[in-house]
Length: 126
Image 1 (cartoon, one colour):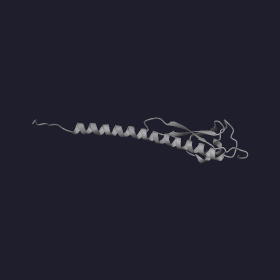
Image 2 (cartoon, one colour):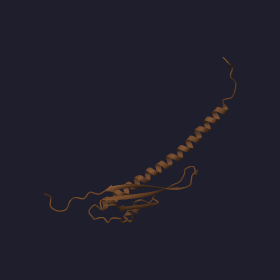
Image 3 (cartoon, rainbow, N blue to C red):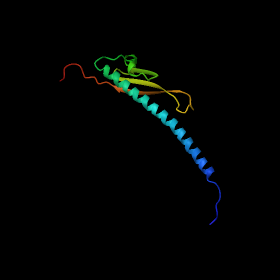
Image 4 (cartoon, rainbow, N blue to C red):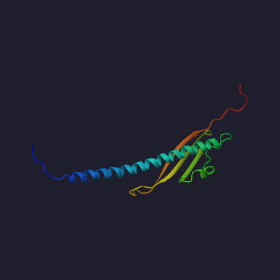
């Protein structure tokens, strides 16, 4: 058996640097993914809220309904809720994302969701 002499310090420094780099990249990615999921959740809630509020009314196609519910979403950068076909509401919610490590510039993340309102047929049931 050979006598192996040398320091393991360069190996430990290299592995520590690699582990640190991976953790920094993952923290950026997870933060971005979390903000994206939050924007999707806010868009879903906005679409469902407008669909519920207008369930007894005839919606106007193309009208922006976000002004009626904007107070419910103080953290949003922007919100747009429109009626696509009179039964379906499409909401687009945008949130500002700040890099936790300040490596990337601030970005605005937008997600879209749809909700459909149920309309019962009017008139006598046969």
